[in-house]
Length: 304
Image 1 (cartoon, helix red, strand yellow):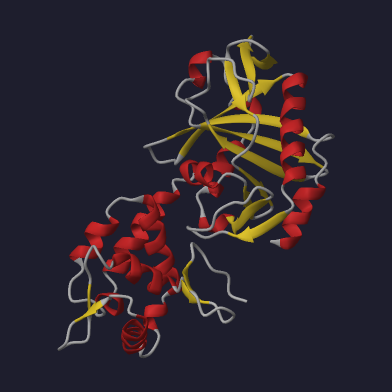
Image 2 (image 1 turned 90 degrees about the horizontal axis):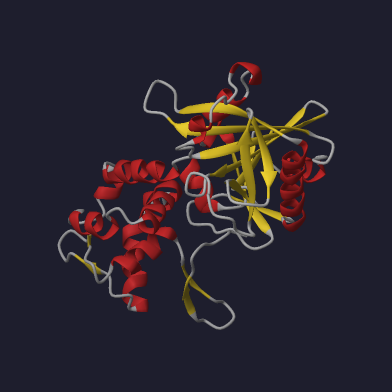
């Protein structure tokens, strides 16, 4: 991913050829329906400027995880194989002349757009979900567009508009995420969190740690943040470590975390009052400073 990040930083957007594709979600046999939109030189230059400005801001990358956040000068990286992007990529790599927008009605209901930058046989994809299916009110943070005679042009009044950033970029087989929420919306990543939680609740090694699962199910519900946390718990799987339950009970008693254990079986008794402490320990995010001996709950942790 490091080499792809450098390739993205070095890409010559100014001399690239630009292609704009819009996409809609599909309930049919294909995940996305896409159309090519012809654009004029001014709008193409706007796209290039957007990419250059944003990549000048992005100076570092971190591995993507469901609970990792994007900082003001960074992005998150993961491979395309872990997403639905290849399904979208297939649709926007079709022949432009055979899939061109011919009517403004084809732009209605658009869920997002992909801008392809091609230079020296290298392609960078800039992807963004639509803002209210294209804005119709002028705003300084948007590039406004007019669709006329089959061509999309940049203008400075009310018409269609494109936000002046991208949610994520793709080069080779790596995705670099500038806007995490936008990426997860476009790629429907929350569905993956729901699936991970379902799998976790079906895991015998996880279920065997608790007297019942219902309080956990009720606590997590459909909350996006809690689903993210359960996904990371499933990914880390530290509950599979030998003697995990015994160790947790010992530390819990010493540190007085308040987690309840069944006196007979030794299993955790989950309840709404202790769920935060339970999740932090299963995430391995309840940490103690060796310098001050203070104990902290952290939103994320990178192992050194």
